[in-house]
Amino acid sequence: MPNAFERRSAISSQSRFVHYTTAENLFHILDSQEIWFRNTQLMNDHRDVEVGIAKVRAWLEDAERRDSLVETVETCLPGIWQQGVDKYHNWLPKIVDHTYVLSIAEHDPKEDATGRLSMWRAFERDDAAVAVVVDVAPFVQMTETLQAYPVPVTYWTDSQLDDEFKLVANQIASNRDFLSNLNKAALVEMVFLTLVFAAICWKSPGLQDEREWRVLTHPQLWPSKRLFAQQRTFGAIPQTLYTLPLKNEPSSNLTGIELPELIKRVIIGPTQRPRPIREALVTKLATKNIADPDSKVVISGLHWRRSAMG
Image (cartoon, rainbow, N blue to C red; front, side, top):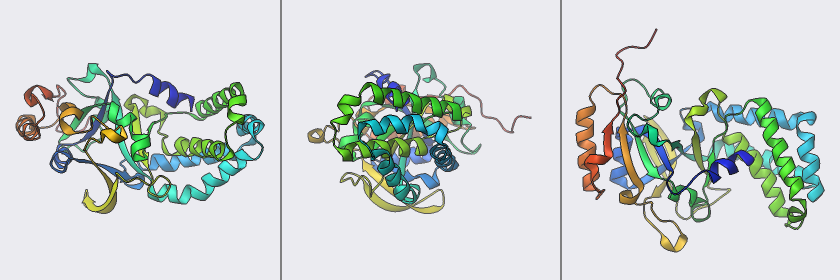
């Protein structure tokens, strides 16, 4: 998708991602030296996937909205559009049930001292939330090594979704000769993945300041030898999740993922007692050989509220 390509192209070696979580979960990551891919049905914003699927379904059912793209795709090789759509529909129940995701977001250096207010607001008032700022390189390397796809979340209205698919049609038309020489399976997969990512990585336009990315994996679609299924209780809910050991594998071009290289900063969000949390985090980072932890852990300047606004 053009939007995903533009956002990926904007990522540089100086860019940073950030993972918002609780201090308790960060301790689990540090102690186990692994990160978790959770089922999309158990995300805090799991309904976004349901709405994204409904948005794609409505687009597919509206001939006026879809025909420009369909006709352009068919000029590359007749029949590939319907085969891609058929694969999407056949896989959709399994995609809904068995897609696992790691949620991260683009980090702005201007947020180094405070984090992002809209992200802090996603936590319960009694949570001790933290923002873990990390290097981007390991995440953009994940596709080949881990069979996991880093995809920027889209925050489209219906008209923006239409505009995006029109851009796809224009790009296909501009590259028709090249695409026509690809094998049929590759073109069908292109149609299939376009629909999957549009459905699974949609959020309300009102949340666009989150700038979220989702690293997607599916054990049946994209089997991985580096991701391991485990059954754990998370937030009092027993569940299957997939873990990624934070261990470099240079031979597979997966580097920079070990804790001392990965973690650049930890921001403690609004909380009633930030100082003891900071002390514990600095000590824990030191035990994991993370250099200069005292300078890496900061307390957000945002105030903890005793009651809701209103």
